[in-house]
Length: 211
Image (cartoon, rainbow, N blue to C red; front, side, top):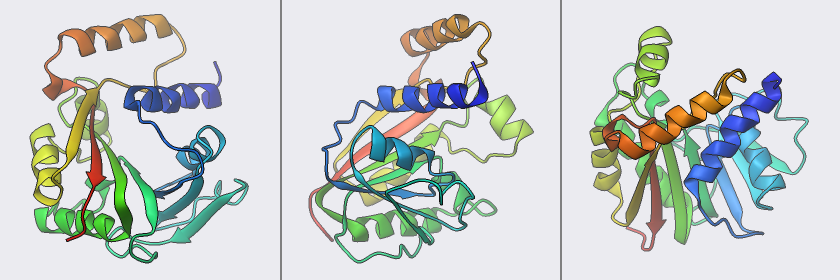
């Protein structure tokens, strides 16, 4: 299994666990889209009209066809109100105010999502869980990611949105060697572990009414 195949194992697992029914032909905004790999999945697999923003332009964005990209911040999304059917964020929120991790700034960002989502549109937020047994030593202690606690994730989302469905699941980029062992580990975690320790917190938000 080469590096690219491994990467798509992880991406495909994320979308499999998400189990969200994207409707062909609708549009989606990926905030913090990075290298555009999720945008490519939205375009190729789900046949969505795909838009992405980030604070920088990754070198891989240009070769991706049918992707609309803009430089932009989550605090001031460069699109008009009521523009998107779907908004997607994957491991973005814990980066937007890395030094202070201010609740005020997190709420300000979430309110900006409400501005650009259409009525009855969906916002999908996936965030790594700080105290997952694999994430905490590797991502938090070694790499310095300030992942949110699950309780903070839920409280912050609930401050801004009312109709939220939460999902919690285990998913990682596994080494190719002994992949079946890692899949067994994943299954055991999802079966027996308290949800507070699963690797991903996910909020699927239906925005029914503008405020």
